[in-house]
Amino acid sequence: PEAFKRDELKVALGLHARSTRYLESVAAGLQRHDLQGEPVEPVAPEHVHHAIMEVFRRRQARSNQDLRPYARVQLITAIEASGLSREAFLLCVRQQDEVSTAMLDEAFAELGEQAARRDALRKTFDSSGKTVAEFSDMYGMDPAEVSRTLEQARPARNAPAARTSAPADVQVLPPEASAADTHSAT
Image 1 (cartoon, rainbow, N blue to C red):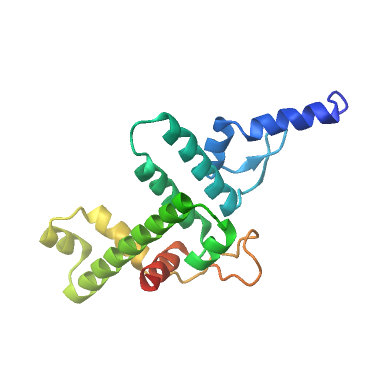
Image 2 (image 1 turned 120 degrees about the vertical axis):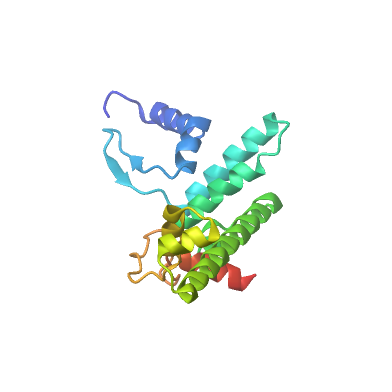
């Protein structure tokens, strides 16, 4: 610390924090590390969202292709990883621009569709009275995929601990519950 002048260090860290490489790491939800390389804290959902949108804007400006589907997948992953409900997530990110709002709406709509498909599969499986293998064979599905989907569709018995980045009055839900809330809210 004594080797660096305060102003020079501030400029260097500012340049690093605005670099695309750093933003890509934040957008991926990778844990933050201190200067010794030790993990220190998870990245807040609003920081992940901001990084995803900034990387999207930078890449879209240089590309002739529509990169929205790629960014939407990243947003869905970030929303699921946050464990926050739709309302809590929107409260955290507080975006203002139309592009960001539209992309979040698309991501929440897709999460709702996924939750509805999982729920429909679970209900069909429960009413069939078959084993996973028999059910999978009957519908021509992969047994491992059916097992995974049924596991995701089961209600979470143990709610995850509240994230420190969520305001105290915000309810934290598991990804399955937040996706179901999304579907019922639209």
